[in-house]
Length: 109
Image 1: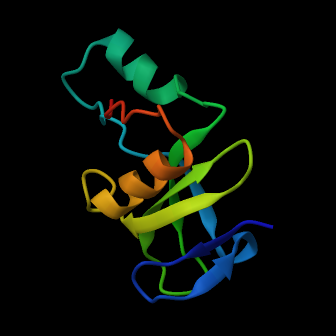
Image 2: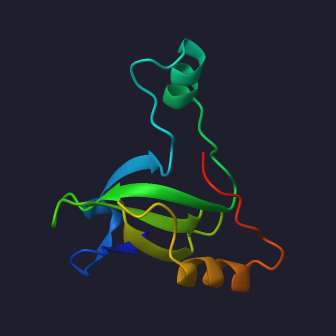
Image 3: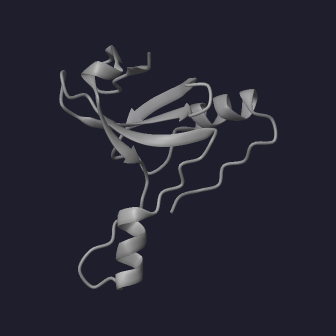
């Protein structure tokens, strides 16, 4: 079972108390964007095997959205951080680099 720590209320909660929100740090497309850009935003996701950043909502708790960095292959959780943060904190990046030698931070869409 997936257990994540809500960075707002500090509770460790299992996935039944959470609502998934998909891939994090996507460039949001809206009015004025091309049809191709909007189609990419709606339908194309990275879906990697390995380290991935996802959006989660503490639905049966504080109700706030946050980001979780985890490995989709092993379900290992590297950490969580507030949704308003533009990239993972350095401590999470260091934790990933320590467990995945040679892994590099690829940035965001």
